[in-house]
Image (cartoon, rainbow, N blue to C red; front, side, top):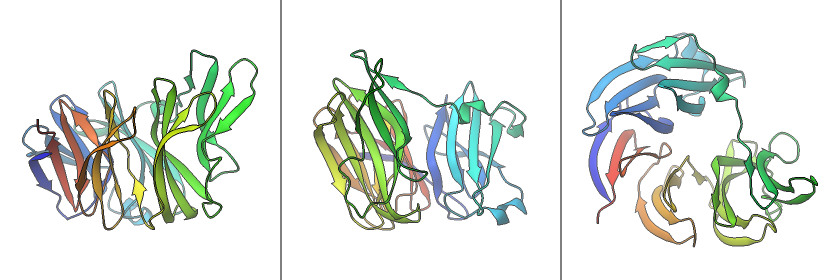
Length: 280
């Protein structure tokens, strides 16, 4: 991978979730603000606060953003304060301001239905804190399998990262593991399940303390994903058909997930926004 440019955030804060690309602009959430950067060169366009000065006191420094999506030219942000209360806002990047708009895109879920009659959907499996996917026979509503059937007993809480991916007869699910709510990371997995039987075709798994995955980008049959913790962060290219790791670049520490635009990948690491291009 070749580094095209880096942009240092001031103050030196971490990027939240994955950046978004709209035309020739990269939008990044960091330090309670929306940053707009030139996608080709990394220079700075503008910075728009998402939270006011006093509102910042109610939100944690990290993990305050739960969803950051783009739809029809608008940017939608879902946030959670220190007391677990959710709020949302919509930004118009052209006007460079917060606007009043329907926040429905933040809450609308997606179900994945296979042509062979198996429905796979993302849901909470037991109670409130164990999130995974379930597979049912679509017409009979018979449960076939769940994505956490083979978890170690010590893993009490799970979270699915990003979308569920369909690759031929398999689905690929990324999960973060926690031992104590969502405050004690206990590892992660990237697993390809056969859509009907739930048998594991391939799996990448780590039970290293503090390691977790961030939102990923998919190009063709390859996944580009960041992960790690305070140390040993990485940017990886993974073949979704075989599970083979094709590229593994170290970055410490990783701050965010990956955005993709015209063969260039963007993510946060060490208080910087980094643009990478695959060589060759």
